[in-house]
Image (cartoon, each protein chain N blue to C red):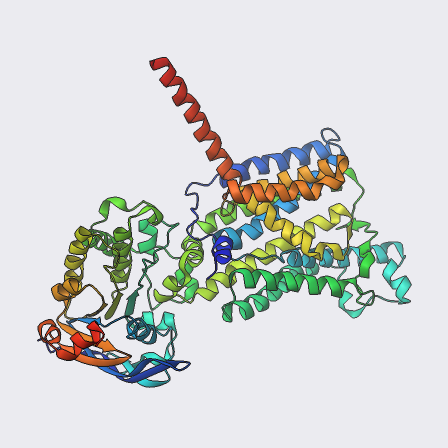
Length: 250
Length: 374
């Protein structure tokens, strides 16, 4: 197993909605260079966990630090993004009325610029080059001027991943990237996620599809009722008695 | 997110990449020059016709102001009459003060309130340029404060529309009071001149009409560029998926604020152009009906098209003018039927109508080819 520097330090995070403890004292270390899969039955707190990391939900307690020092819990959603955390939503979230190219253009967010400057600037030559490169990575070079609304489900997911790549995030969070995809689309997404792996980046994938997880994950964390149940390689997790119990409802 | 919200916001609704706005703006600018020249030369249209056209143009401006935030930003205001009224009342204050100074006759509201002088907020109101500045700044501040409070609290969709409507209603109640110095329920009238030009002069009417059309042309041209800029893309992105844009690192509130304030100021300019031409302002411009009607113009003309919103305002205003002359009691039913028809059959307004006609023509042609083939 790779032992990179810590990208995300998560300690004792808890949040309750009314009497429901959605996340209940969760601690985790996510390292640079790794692809981490987070699995668990419905209601295990996976999406809530991402909501907390990205500033959408405020936890009742706990610590989340990026890059060994940036306190993510003190930041708003846009600031979390600027700090280097990219998030792909569960349902494909692209700007349907805009073209593929304009969707990617909006991902060119220069942290050095304020909002006023961002509203009226155009892409630099270097940024255009990066856009070309990302279009190639997601295999959509020929679709630049197409409206994102007419893309297939899979293409929308890839476009969204492409948008996140342009952000050059340190931590990339993918919420069920292959949900609703055909077999062929899933295969392509496996390749795409593998190509996202980089020494200066940590990738966190939430997924239900076990065969997909097996193909991409270095480390698997199993959540159950808002707590970390088991953590380790896919093989170890699959052979764990408790994990089977949880999935089979025993 | 309810279905009604998504209907209001119009997520994913396509934006015409190559708008007709520059062409329409150029035609309008030509029309403005034509009216100006023929008006001055004492030929062409009658004073009555020029006056009506000028008023309709200000409605067109009001409609594209709403289209900016609704069609592109997905933010429906059912209270844009407020900004229209602010512009209208401010220019009316200017003209009332000038009339008082020129003729020495105090406005009606001073007489029935028993006042010997205008209230303190009429200070400097005789200066046109001061008033012009106040129209832009004051409207900007009102829009800014309202926008900031609402957008910060993340009020959207139906709730936002209801709050805007409530605000315009509150303003109407306030302006119906007779002790505010704005003429109460009678409003303000008896305007004499603007920048030294007599308002009853044919030349003045022509100039006001031409300026109104020119301002619409400029607004169409400028807003068309704006909505195709990166700012415009952000606005559409907010309409389609605001959370996604926030997670890309943008403080979306400032994009909304800019569009909202700009829209408010444009509506105020429309009001300031409207009142000198119609010759009166009273609290009925603040009635919720007018504000709803603005949204109807935009919906019927086609949201997110600018040109469609403008045409919607012109066509509905013309229809209203004609039909209320002949069958006034039927007008509300006709308008309601139009709204329902547009919502059900033409979600993009007139733009869909063009599309339906084109498809019909193609089918007709196709049928003929089949016949010929047989």
